[in-house]
Length: 197
Image (cartoon, rainbow, N blue to C red; front, top):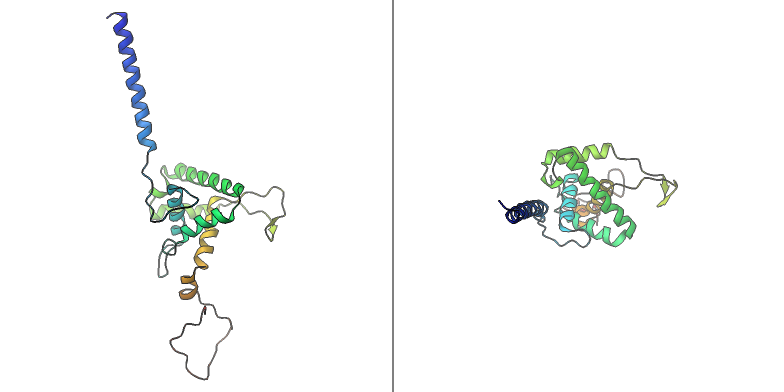
């Protein structure tokens, strides 16, 4: 083998190995985007799918509608875009990344790939081990070094807020009795729903 053939073969082998590594990186990094039946306005599709699954794990469908059925993920997406300032939005996205890292560290896969039991276990553990909230009053922090709220804490709060303030839940699920105690009318009131009207 002469010098020219050696250089040509070495360059070919080096090129093949680099193309192989690059191709494998491209294939691994190109995960299929999550399928959504709505268009997010703040999150990208994968983040919106994660938010939707976290919300559905917090409030699954039982006798009452689940978070997805009540369009809670869309509500969260809109609330984050319209009510949070840029700093809070940036903190939320950073915290979302930390959330995904914790899931990957514990299970070796993403939250979307977990079984329902694993999702429930992880979120229950997150809820138990959450950092304490800073002391505040009327939205004003009374501590100088209050910890930032985590992704899970924000999403849990927005999930519950969106679910319980929806018209469907207010009309058909929540039973609000403005007058405590038993009301005995002078005539029968059958077939009426006066909970939220």
